[in-house]
Length: 254
Length: 304
Image (cartoon, rainbow over all chains, first blue to last red; front, side, top):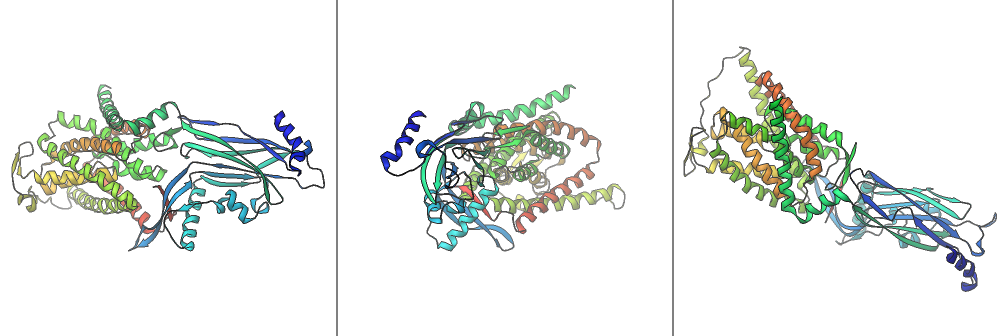
């Protein structure tokens, strides 16, 4: 902290240009999924270090903060239903090599007021600026249709969302944002990115990893189902057999 | 009471799932069906991924049929020889079904196939049951004299080669007929997570020509083993058996099954059958509506 402060003080001398710095952190680096897991709430917080160690005054433009949490990317197939012979069937499909499994963005002001479209696309800021990589070649219109279908579905499942205004900046230097991660997220390595934006430009960015994994019994079940499939299946059958037989036997006694 | 399902990767209200199991168990005890045809759609409706729903429902049906099989064994209501042939067919069918499941999953048509199968099977079986039970109710009320039905198997069955004697059922037919029936129900068990009792019982009565005293016990015997095999096939291929989900369902269904069996002993069978027919037709209608109406979600995302 002190070093960062010192660096911030030195920054104008070193770069010859006044640029604020970011000191970000996350409330939890590891999220363990146990039996009672119904989602997690992450607090992303930190400080903006202005050159000279002072917050912007009345006349100056304050900087904005955008935080983004991304889930591990996955390869997915998006299918589109259409009516064939009176019933709705999956007709067209599009394969994406990598799409984020989870995406949440919070900002201190609506993102469109902060940066232009090009910058949004570079840093993937906002649901309409995600870099989805389709594997199959398709016309831009078709791809656009599938992109918005994917984003819309994920948004309604709570796996993609934007929270404009959810970042609070206190005294111009301390920021905090609360983002929730629903129980439906896949496990893996998540990232929490923080961006410092002023005058339509990203001045600083920082990334912190967050690990989400199953713990205890849940991890044991998931790994056994994957690695010892035969034993797992036998246990499942055995348990159902015991339950059925036990209930019948108990019932006859009373 | 929220509980995280480690395979389905989501948290559910445990009490809702237990209540669902209880309701299905009640029906299975009352009507002697596994109840898988209700569990799978209801689980999907609740938000469980279809594959996990079908795989876990299969293990619930295993549990639901165990006590029934024991009860019928005590009453000598199981034709073990016939059951063994059906189970052999069921194992072949589960493997075939597992292969089909993967194929359909890859082509993205699994949901549609499940939906269409439900509508066709439940619609036709429910319709037949409703017709039959209404007829039986009219007979019992004396509105119509009972029609004597000759117990005979279907002419196609008689044309099959290699006849065996099935002593317990009093039949002299080719084992190929029950084997094929077993294969068919095995495929259905894999695809739909159903035990197949609702197909098997009428098929044994009207196609194989078995007597009513061994039909239900033998059907449960086949259901028990085929669902166990289907659970194994799911565990090793789709890896979608959620043991926590299965236990929650079992907790409810085994209790429900016992309560249902007590209730069934007091009720008139033809009214029970009519009630079952109505439930089956309602599920079929719901599935048909799901296929015919514009769905809420036009797009679906699956891992590739």
